[in-house]
Image (cartoon, rainbow, N blue to C red; front, side, top):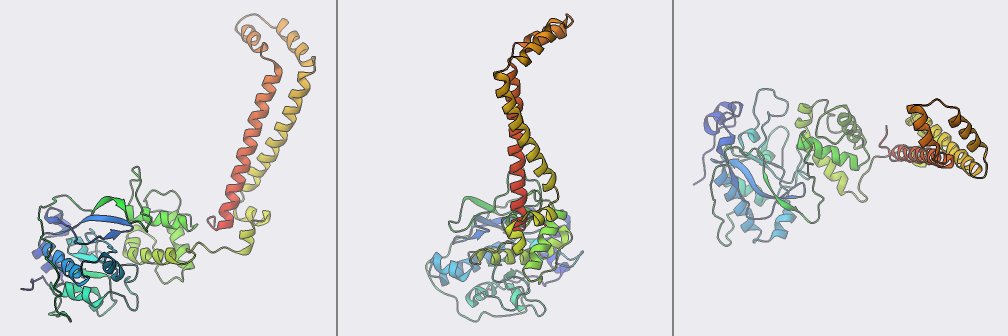
Length: 398
């Protein structure tokens, strides 16, 4: 018998699932272990955290997909269903400040966002996947009359729609093991990653939003400069995203805040995925003048390179002069005689004692030490010049 789901309005969802605004969802979430391998941004998921009332239906839909694919992981991958794009997300509907998204109820799931992003003209979701969810009474975002959301499935009333194909028969369906996770807002991941994808892992010291961190890291790899990779929204991240969106055709609204970013986050991630999958992978376009890295262009884009270059030349010449002075001092007795005269005529006390010890150190040693310090400054300055020039050539520096 097909399950009965609430109407897709906030009053009905609150009565059926609980009120996200009152913290009533987390205590009702349970892990659903998919029957086939699924990956979120390259990392294999262990379980999908879902509302206990919808979890059996989700597992039934996934089992049907598994049966249709003849329990062949390659067929699942080819259909794009193994590309998991998220389920529970405590957020409002895009563009609303009062209406909770079905993701906030842990009653919705997104699949293969890269090819089925919100608003694309036509997605690639296979009919057998749509039928598997439809057979459980779920609503598909591809049926939306406004802006289709091809990757999206939600367990609310679907208006009586029926699947277009019969249920596939293969093997024995996986059983659902239900043990509630009372405080599990995020999906659980295994420790190893998919072999063909570079996983995005948040560093232990990153305290910001993992989604923002992931986007920052991907933008950085394309030579956009989001600033510090910390998962925190700021001007650097906003500017880097704006540059990326404009370079990719400007079909996504440029977010000016974290809330605005969350509204178009899946579209941004899908566009990043398309850019990364190009051959060669997309990187920030730069002009011929920037690529050549001529001095005038570098100085115009990064004016701080001028004093750094000056420091390099001053320190380099200083070190050369100092080293030659040390050599000259080694064969000359003039400095030694001057030092002896000074120590013989200095006052007694702490200063005299200190200068007595210091005077025992050959002058050539002090000169060589000073020359070495100047050489280090010169080399460090040169490294700074190279890094600045490289950032201008790659387009990372605006």
